[in-house]
Image 1: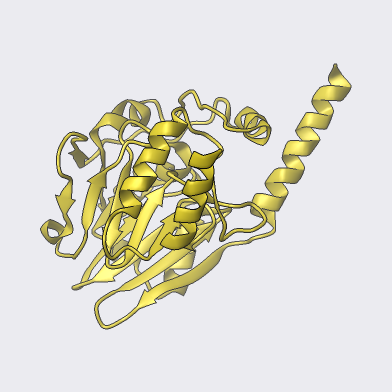
Image 2: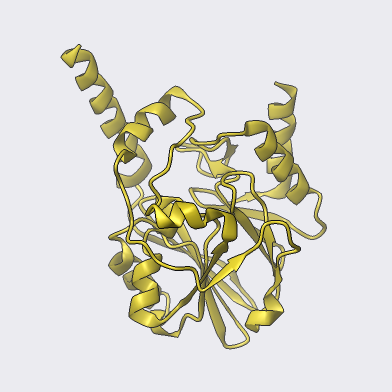
Length: 262
C-alpha cells in the first residue's frame, strides 16, 4: 500500500514539474496597439493578465497565494507599476485565480471585482470540493487538499442573473459577462477581439496552445454549453485561459465539436 502511495506521489511530482517547473516566470505581449496594451504574466502556469487602456489599468485574475512578489516583479519588467492598477477582475474564486487578491488589495488599494455567487468560495479561502475530470486530476487534487488563501472582501460583486458590466463604467472598453460554467460565480471578460475565460477551458500541459478540458469541472455539459455561448459571440478571435494557451476561437470550436461528438 505504501509503495503504491509513493508511486502516486512521485507521479504527481513529475507532472507538476512538467506543468510548472519547466516554464519559469514569463511575460507575453498579447496586444500592443494604439487602443490598448495587454500583457500576460505567467507564474507556474497560472496566468494573470494586465490591460492598459485610456490611462486605466486592470488585472484579470490573481494567481496563487504567495506569488504576489513574483507577479509584481514581472509587472515591473513589463513597465507596469502595480501601484497604478485600478481594478482586479477575478474570473472565479479558486485558489489559483484569487490567491493574491487580498495582497494586491491591501498593498495597492486595487478594487477587486468578482462573481457574487463565488463569495462563499472566497469566504472559505478557496478551499472547496473539486470535481476531477481525469485520473491525473484526481492526483492533482491530492496536492491541493487543505490549501487556502487569505480571505478578502469583494469591492464589487457581480450578480449572476444580470447582464454583467460594461467596462465603460471603469473607463475602459469591453464587458464582464457572468458565465457560471466552472464555478457558480465564474465570469468571462471580453476586451476587443479577446475573451479571457478563466477555467472554462485550458491549454494542454504539453501542447500548451491546444484547447483541453480543465482538470476540475463539476458539470461538463453545462461547461460545454457556456463555451458554445462564447463561441457564438461576434468578433471574438482569441481565447485566453487561466492556464497555458492562448488559442484561436476556431480551435475551440473544433475542440467543442469533438467533445459533443464523444
